[in-house]
Length: 309
Image (tube, rainbow, N blue to C red):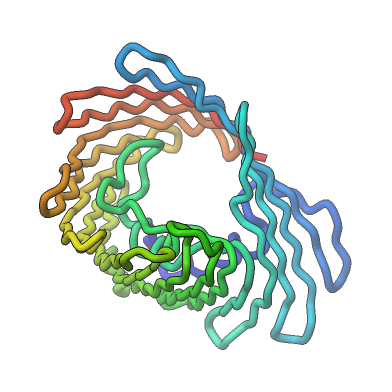
């Protein structure tokens, strides 16, 4: 979420240069630098009296080098590891250019989709939540993608990406795009965002998603809401998320959320969730979360311990 005019610019620099707040510079010259960071996260979930270990680790390497007075070359690689699997979250290279009061990036590879610009307004909880903010693949994170983002000191963020085919077999991702933008409204505490995504799989119907979100920051209280309209397999769906977060002190923050997604002639999704996070310092945090599925009357609980480096 964006609560001041400089945060959007900071987030872009973070994503394209350091990758994590605690990333360490392991190589630096006058024109280049290389950073490494990541997290180690132990997570345990209880669902229907079945306890699952969802622990994971991420390692992110990012580099930046000066090409001209206003243009830098950038590269990012991030891998996630679990007990029995691993996956590449990011792998892209491109340029970052200074533009008056902001920056723009243009990258190719496995990139973030544009829809996070909107869904980040309500996707703020420790684990659960973001029922309606669940993004299509092209708007979330995808390979074979060219992506661009612009952000400035006035709280403006614009993002777009296009992804080509990942395969030729029926059901493989064929192509798609997403576009989104957000704007901080002066010093009012409000941020508004809007986005659209469309993608197609081989020999299957295309699907599309339209999201609009509004966030409000008032001192230690944050409120966010999102509305989505989707079309999947010829069915039309509508949904929404509402979320609130309160920062009691520099350590403890609690959130509560509710969301639902309803499709014509299909199963509904509806859940309420709450969590509390204790961030002991910039590197170490603990959290506990509960999710109540009000459709199936199921309850899931999660506890986690996370170390960032």
